Image (cartoon, rainbow, N blue to C red):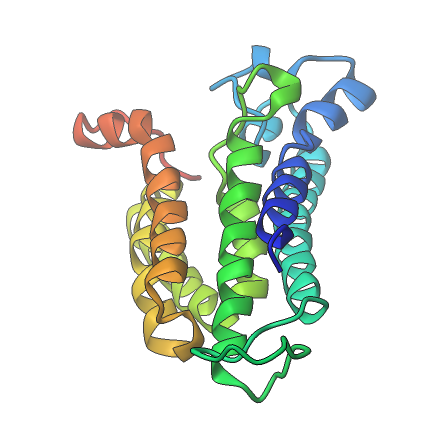
Length: 224
């Protein structure tokens, strides 16, 4: 199990760093999406290039890479040897009925979600200039804590419906998600897993710092 977290971190970062928005706009429109709007590579900015189809494709692919990273982490957890907690006995195969094994598997998955998010936000291929991570986080947490995602999506839809601010919906969803994950999934209730989940959500909020400034100044664009 020694090298597994490192493998998961590297693979998840590389998956997350695939700049689908940049690639799709470059291939199909011959443009650099970073020269449009906010300059990031996410679906919202892709839409500003005038192609809703590419924006939808970017959203789905960005979510898919987050989902794939977490699924890979769970797969890794099932193929490593675990020792019994507090025991010096020989390591045993992954046992899904063992709560400690499941907690470790969710720690692996949370690490994957965090690293995939880092990859999307700071892709090495684009000089660490990426997107805000909402779609990638959505995919990652659909694999890690699907019920918590449903709660966050409900908050997002409610916030956008009432205020017409997509950014506010994204921020509030990120605030709610750790609490929903803790409440709905007992296997994430470890210090390591919750710290990684909170770190993911804080990253998303920080990446919305310009939106927060505009919201406070009442200059943020509303969804129409």
